[in-house]
Image (cartoon, rainbow, N blue to C red; front, side, top):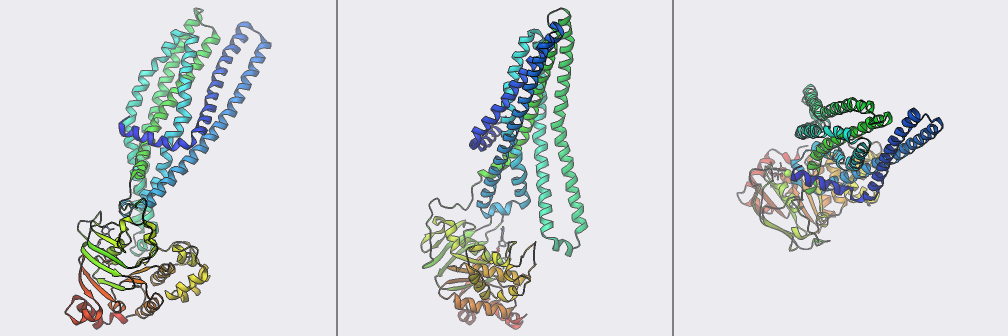
Length: 585
Ligand SMILES: Nc1ncnc2c1ncn2[C@@H]1O[C@H](COP(=O)(O)OP(=O)(O)OP(=O)(O)O)[C@@H](O)[C@H]1O
Ligand SMILES: [Mg+2]
């Protein structure tokens, strides 16, 4: 095994640590079944020798009864240890899946932009299970076989040393076979995982965007693409099977050759009186067990190799550290008291080719209403992501009340904000639960009050079950503007210190938007609000307006100041006015 594989092997074994005592118990029971097997073999020899040679029928009955008793005990032991192993495997699978899910939840946004949902789902549901083969087969098979093989070898030597040497002749070709298949299996397993994750991603993306698929009449194409990937998946799993299953027959062949050779040599020994018939029968049976063990060890090793491929992928994610590192003992800021300051902030997305924010300098004082306007792609939403610390700036600093964001407790920082995004993710639940997502303990009165401010109450009470109506995939579909208002209610319910509306009402008609913004201004007076909108008339009332272009704040001031000068803002505003975009419904 290479060094990396060895590391992954040990790292996987660590998942077995909490279950060591139970694993030992299960392995102990497993070993007892081996002892029972050996006892059975011994009784077999005695049975044949007493029956055929001594012809002692009474004794034979006893021996047969003993053999039966041993078989019975073996079955019970096998059942109990089998159950224990299944139980431990289930618990460990849970542990790995929980650890993976938790790690994925904690990883920063850059990880999530780089990894598809399909990829992560494959990781949680397939890889996590497959890597367990390492531990379960280790304790279930290896421990047992490592005990059984020497025991059988000793037993074989005790029966007939000469024949035993011949029995061992299968070792070198068996080892050679294993080596041959090792690399092949690693390669094919990797390839089949790769295609599996593509298949999941395809299914996840198309099924969650059925409307787009149908709108563009792409059903047939999607079906064909899926079939193609699926066929590819099948051919790769068959390749994988071929690789691992081919090793089985090769070992089987060695086993049969070994047994034939032993029968041939053994009968000669019997004819010459060197071995009893019982001895030969038992020798052959034991050799058969011995070869069975060798073949089990081979398939154990090959499944270990496949398990290591999964382990590598799982451990890679578990080892990944979030790029936005939460401080170990971060300061919990319960209130925003004075000022948010962005100083010389430069930022580029990990996957991006150019800086999206370029030397942003900005101060937001408590109680202010700030508006950020500018062309699509100018970096408005990115500023919000930096404020929330979804990403850390490449250069420059961001601070709240003099504390660098990097030193603040992350969940507490995010609790200061209530964000209503342009494209809100609404969870599949009742309307009331969707609004309460950020504050689960909220009473229905509070939920309704937030919905009223967000202009959502009217349409909610007209839904089939009002606030109890299920929304999302399993329930009622909402319009774009309705979803936006639910997301706004969800943000308002947190009664945040800093309210952020990132084009939060872009799908709502202009008069309704105006009424909602007025209500927010009245109810949230004294709190800080950041508004981002393409509809300039809706944000003209802000205390300060920032106009952005290409990641730079190009103009700053209130509406009157910006209109009094020859600014880009004035240009944009006048174009919208002339087209009466602000009152379009
Ligand atoms: N996750 C991401 N990875 C890489 N680039 C990104 C990512 N998100 C946004 N960008 C790029 O960053 C730039 C700024 O995006 P941002 O979302 O801040 O624009 P915006 O001003 O909010 O635009 P809009 O008005 O359309 O919402 C864009 O060029 C966009 O393509
Ligand atoms: Mg945006």
